[in-house]
Amino acid sequence: MASSSEVSNPSARPKLVLASASPRRLALLQQAGIEPDALLPADVDETPLKNESAKELAKRLARSKAEVARRVARTREDLTNSYVLSADTVVVVGKRVLPKAEVEDEAAGCLRLLSGRQHRVYTSVCMITPKDTIRERFVETRVRFKRLSRDEFERYLASGEWRGKAGGYAIQGLAGTFVVKLVGSYTNVVGLPLYEAVALLDGEGYPVRSSWLDAA
Image (cartoon, rainbow, N blue to C red; front, side, top):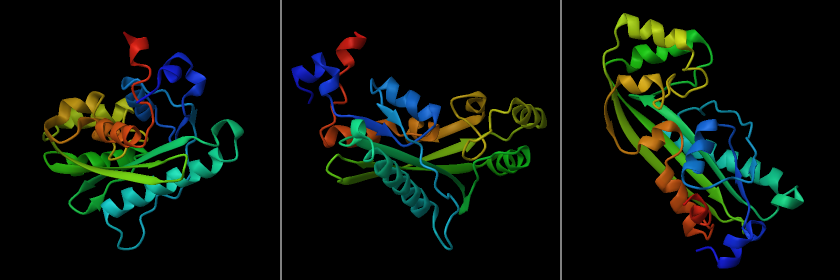
């Protein structure tokens, strides 16, 4: 729990680094009243290793991102003793890991696989404390899409909303109209399971509710 001095003096609060450039992850933390002090996206190779499962991939990438961001943060005097939070989200149909669509052909391939079927969304969240303790949470959500009509398929591709999204869609946007059923964490599908991320921070002493009075 944050002390009264932390609430009245924000500079006394521990620093938080988000190892991501994702506006969705940032917005989710801000929704919870948490404002990172720095964004240090980690440039890591996201190619799956041979015989690596989707779960193992998400966990490895989340930890790699956190470790890269930690190394950068430790070189900056203002972030030396910061908490570092990272996440990696993987969309899976059967055993097939779908790409983060960057071109229309990739997005079209994802939509064809997702249409009328259930898929799973995995996110691994990794946190490194100022004492270099590593804590992790793994979350799975099951999502079923309706069978997409040709018009829906073509117009969604034309929207460009799929660009850079795991599985070629953003549930918080237009593709939310495709979802017939969701079992599990909605925020996981957006990109950061909020309950688990906040629980990690709270459990290691980060004052997650220190700004709540300011929002009243």
